[in-house]
Image (cartoon, rainbow, N blue to C red; front, top):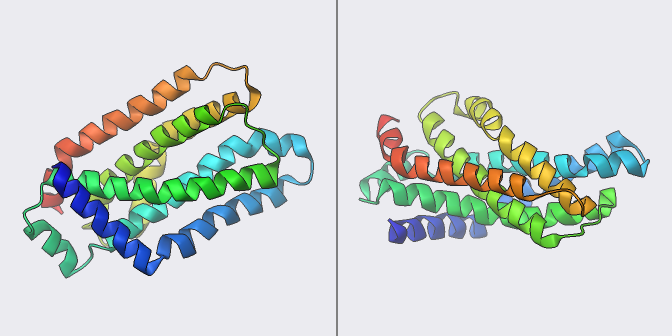
Amino acid sequence: MWRDALLVAGKDLRIELRSRVVLNQVGPFGVLVLVLFAFALGPAPAPMLQAAPGLFWVAVLFAGLLAVQRSFALESGDRGDGLRLAGLDPAGIFLGKAAAVVAELAVLEVLLGAGVVLFYGARLHSVGVVAAACLAGTLGVAATGILYGALSSGLRVRETLLPFLLLPAVAPILLAGTRAWQAAMSGGQPVWPWLVTLSVFAVVYLALGVLIFGPLQEST
């Protein structure tokens, strides 16, 4: 399983390095979301600081949606059948695709974090808390996205169905991630409940994906 996961993750990342779709399209999209919200909130610093954590995670979720759609677009047509016929462990395919999305989103989150500091004037008292929240939240987004991406990949309306399936499912990440960022910015709020929520969410969906990705792949 782990060997197959490394193979799939390496394949997806090599394709992205060559095509640079995530870097040239998904990255600017996430930064553009922050810029547009900065214009919408106006020049007053208080509303911008209050909204910064939530807007960061909104941008991450929309970018994650695009990254998941791109991940399954790589397997469209004959390449998808070739992946199935290659004899790879379905759990390895799931973990490999999730790992590739995590790596892509991690790069994006560095850009978005810099954008939050630049556009919204956010000051972080605990970078470690933000890093832990981003890691757990990104794992949850990637695992959930790959799982629901597999569920909708065989349908003609997958481009429009996936957002309806994924975005409500990752609402706990938006809530817990926002609260963790707020705690890191204030320096006085308890952060462990939100980190635990993000971690449990990620573990549950990773385990669920390992167990049912194979049957989902066969059904589509």
